[in-house]
Structures are given as structure tokens and as C-alpha cells.
Image 1 (spheres, rainbow, N blue to C red):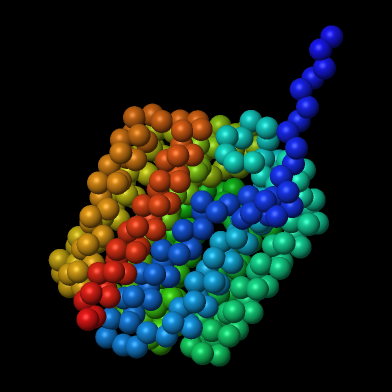
Image 2: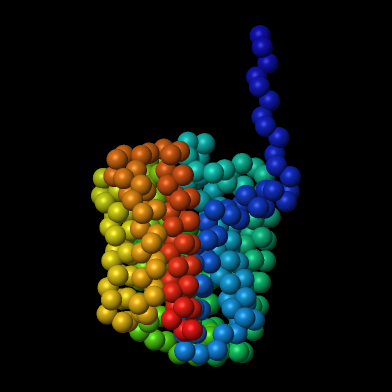
Length: 305
């Protein structure tokens, strides 16, 4: 009898934590900070120190989301060997539940520390927004009633990683909330939600089997594909309307230059791309989100010159 092949060795400790942080998801934290900061400083000063603090806090919250999801999904049985996404650290046995919990607490604690500094600089609304973001991150798959398991993940993602992130970033710089910040948050929110939709589309079958009722599970495969395309279309339509009507500076229409990058993604999703190939769609959607956020920021900066 031939011996069974040996399991591949576990990655180094540093690489395990890097994989658990899920680097491909981190652009989701960067785009709203770029857009919100640039729009807020069109007619005012730019504080680089505040910008870097907001950026660091946003990235830490995204990493905290990933750590908390890794732990909660494992505990609820959503991470099974049949799952198509990248390996999860706790499910693979690379990190214990206690280690992942400690990691999540450390990351969220660091975000809170930065949030306190930003609150001193910009006022109590930042404390409220930051605390709400951390709570929403934990309760996505954790707590007694994880909203990500009840079809509300898409809505909360749009609200916190779109509206709150863009408007909060802008408020730190200018001390006020404006219609322009609200307008900038719409395309950013649509695209960050499209990232989540691509992820949940990939996992419909395994999530359904685990009792994780994401909106994709509720809507089904066909409708979820339509939802993805509608979110992409809504993002670019919003940019066009807001730039044309003056709610956003006309220069922010530069973000429409990213539309050709969206077309093959929409074709792939509508064409039935499934399984591991959706991981590529997810990663490219994340890059589209970052590019659009950066182009909105560039347009706002040009308008302010």
C-alpha cells in the first residue's frame, strides 16, 4: 500500500496573520478615505496627519472585520472544506480561536485608539461613527443575531463602508457634512457592496448548507448576478449625474474612465462565471472600487486647484 500524501506544511506565523488579514480586501478601506478626504478639501485646507490617521483606522477596521469573520464563521460551521474562497486561518488549524480573538481585539483596540485621537481633533461625531463601525464589524457574523446571516450584510456594507466611511473621512478634514460628500459616498458604497455580492455569489451553496442566509442565498444565483450588475451600473450612473448637475465637481467625471474595466466583470457575472473563477471577479471588483475612489479624489483635487 502506498502512503497517503503528506499535508502541505502550515505557513509561517507572520504569513498566517497576513493571510488572515486578507490583503485583497483592504482596498475597500482605502477608496472611501481617498474620495471623502479629497471632496472635503476642495475649498479648504488638507491635514495630512488627520488623513493618515483616518486611513490607518479604516484599514485596521477592515482587518478586524476579517479576523472576526474568520472566527465567527468557524464557530458557526460556515467554513467547511467545500468552501471555495481562500483558506481561513482558524478553520485550517493555523491559529486557535483564542489567538484569533486576541488578534481581533488588538486590531479593533488600535482602531479605537486612533479614533480617540481623531475625536479630540474633529469632535464627538467621529467617536460615534467609529464606535458604530466597530460594532457593525463584529456583529456581521458574530453576536446573538449576526446580520450577515440574515440577509442584511449588503445594506450594512453600503452604509458603513460607503456612506459612513466617505462622509466620516470628509468630516475629519472639514468639520462639516455636505451634499458633495453624500454624493461621493453613493458610487463608493455601490462598488464596495458589489465586492461583497461577488463573494457571496461564489459561496451561495456552501452558505446555504451552513444555514448562512446571505442576501445572495435569499435571492438565488440568477438574481444575485443581476444585483451585481445593477450595483456597478448604479455607481457609474451616480457619478455621471452628480458631476453633470454640479453636486460633485465636473472633474470627478474622470471616474467614468474606469467604466471599461467594469464591462468584462459584468459580462463574466452575467455569463455564468462560477466557482473559483469568481475569486478573480472579486479581486478585480476590489481594484475597480479602488480606482474609482482614486479617480473621484483626483477629480476633486483638480477642481480645487
